[in-house]
Image (cartoon, rainbow, N blue to C red; front, side, top):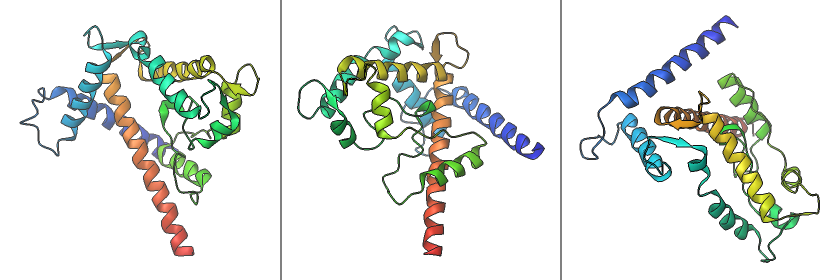
Length: 221
């Protein structure tokens, strides 16, 4: 247990050091930044997100700014699922959409650890592998019918746009609050960089766990 705590502490310190390194470097001008400079690439991505979302140019993102384009995006997503154009999403329409899409929810931090297209992947085994590798509990996402019921808050058997938007808003707000680590109501570039780095690390862990599982199946098969 002591060794595991030491490993997790070391990983946390390394992540903090990487974030500091990202913003200790001079601003990238696009010409002098080598392609292999991962810190420069991350800084460039963070700046691009801020340029798109930070409407007042304050170098912080408020919740209002975070949610500003949500209604428009939700309408596009809703219409794509609503195949018969009756302005309602039925269970059949909802289930017809690929796993991990359309439910307006998802995992903490948006990490789709079981969003794997290969039906032969044992998602429970992947979750256990990720939990063992990271030391964090990995919650199991609800099945599609359960997700539908969570969004259909009036239990009429259909999802209307207001219900769909409410689910999207809840998810986006939860994501904002997760990234806003100091809970001051604004996301800084450092907080966003930390989230992106953690997300990338998690995705690499998932890929490794899936690959390990496939290699084991090939050896045993």
